Image (tube, rainbow, N blue to C red; front, top):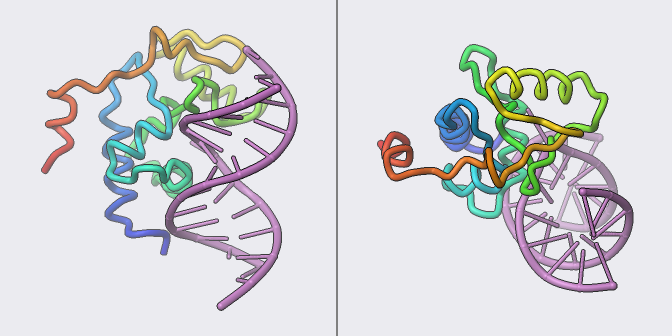
Length: 114
DNA sequence: GTATTGACAGACG
DNA sequence: GCGTCTGCCAATA
């Protein structure tokens, strides 16, 4: 049961809303998804994220812009590759949030509501 | 019901 | 920028 899948759904939706070439932190996703302070839940939700949804979990990073996975890990490398493919520059398992950090605009938020 | 863990965040040094 | 500690909440044992 994982928490209400509704929330997980919302999380996935939010993650899917991240514009290409940008990245968001767990806290950011959690907040936008309606789970303030439950950043951990986001990670778990992404854990269940079905591939059918094509959830760009690779665009979700830590608050500091560091990848959620340890360097050298398959997922981390994959994530890096995908991000770079999207145009995001990843160095040393890190992304410059100052430049690639997703700053949700009203239009973006509106697409999540309802 | 209690203890441990986790794809985390923020504060400190 | 990095390591450590604390706080938060849910899942798992």
